[in-house]
Image (cartoon, rainbow, N blue to C red):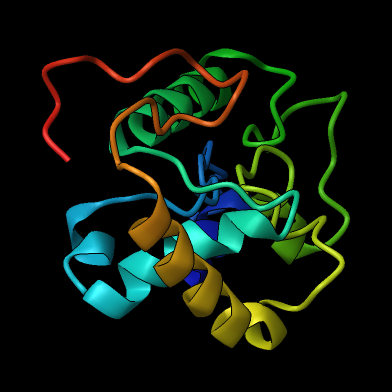
Amino acid sequence: QQWRAMVSYFSIPDGNKHIVSANHGPPTRSESMVGHKTIAIALEGMQNFEPNVAFDVSCSKTLLTALMLYDINFDESTANPMSPEKTVQHPMCLFNENSAHGGSWRCPYLQDSIGTASFITGKVKKTCESRAGNKCPEGSLGPRPDNVQT
């Protein structure tokens, strides 16, 4: 998918360039993530290693939709190859501008090095505290709706 995005952005055989919204999403408590018990526990534990944060699905969907709408509708977006204000120096930079990485790019630890510790702290956290409450990161797009099942 990244390759197709880069080819479409920089040029394709007919010479046309296209707006490409290719934003990386944050770690999210989606069904595919929390469906695996080990991954779900590690996802909760990784938040003990600031600035890592896991998002609820509703927050991720809202955030990524807003980023896509920005990319499509504003000429100054990096997603627009015709933008005079923003130029992409390297093809992989297309994915950096509006990425919502959940803190992993600013974390002083490699994700591989905190995997086991994330699992252990996530297991302790899960056993010691209740799971009720808001799971959106503090200061994010708003509280989790009350009718959402966890």
